Image (cartoon, rainbow, N blue to C red; front, side):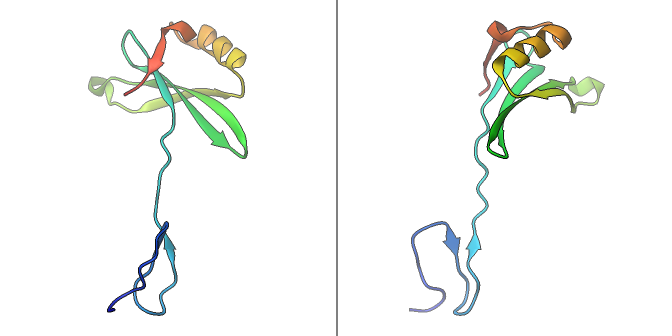
Length: 98
């Protein structure tokens, strides 16, 4: 058997005495976007054991692209208030982004 030891699992080893390296895996973050133009997006992230809802407004490519984070909240009721205050869409207008 030449090379590293083959083990099942998320570890990669190279060489006989190499330290195991954890493979980079990025978990898929749930995201919703508005049905009208797709420029308003809400993502859900787990931060320090709590879920946070992040409202983001994306700019059109002809205006330079990019995104502006409007705010982060901890509950759906606060998210509805954030949408009501800053966005022309509501919770019912959001659908899961592809």
